[in-house]
Image (cartoon, rainbow, N blue to C red; front, side, top):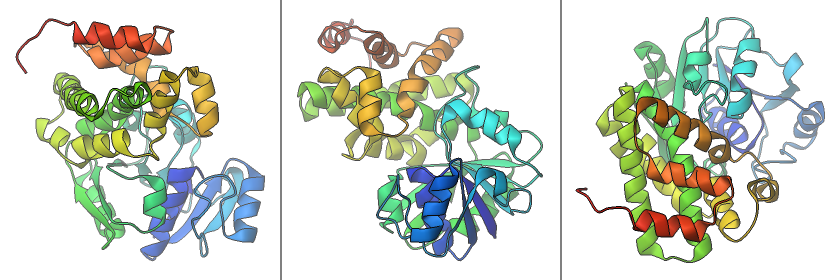
Length: 318
């Protein structure tokens, strides 16, 4: 396949390596021409996933990348610009979304912003640096177009990247967005030194919170026990490389959200998604106490006070 990956951040770069290793003809489309030039000259991304060998992967500025002629377009861009980017893409080739979030302006799932072409989403426990290094993992691909999902499964599945097809597009997308918010809270637990019991309890209740929202939106319960749910949530909350976990840890230690994102040096989707997810839950009448708490901390409430208020909630059935 001729694959053009739009977005040369960590995950876009890692996915380009993955697709190249499966024998596809891959171009990495960069918004910055200097970044594209550096990749072509050195075979390395100067900004993200710097250890990844990009030999055999072409790089081009976005306005000169092979978009209309690609067999597959892959979007690996921040949620805040996803709609703008996908609307600008020419042709009608299928699009695979790697972005984990919701549209900040409307709260819509990102796949619903894709018009005039088939769309699929990929999600799972996929820390970019590990994927780029060829370490084994698995992922789920979801689409309303079953034929497209099966075609992408065949194109991407390998002995190091096992791909499952999940028919629950709603659930896979909502898992991908919500797990980043729970990871911010998990990082807060780390930053306050509250221990592994507290963190495990938070993750378990976070998964229940995610599933409650998913059920209200029409998602399948089993999705939350799978790769896009528990799998991605686990790695995002525990991995030292997890950007959202790290941001929560820095905020718990006194950094502002902006300063935490600046120190990490790349997009922290949970910071964008948290208020969007909170507003969606309120419109649906769904209670998301952890998400509400994360938003309160981002708005300036002390994390210690939030922990105390969550622990004082009236006990109930699990």
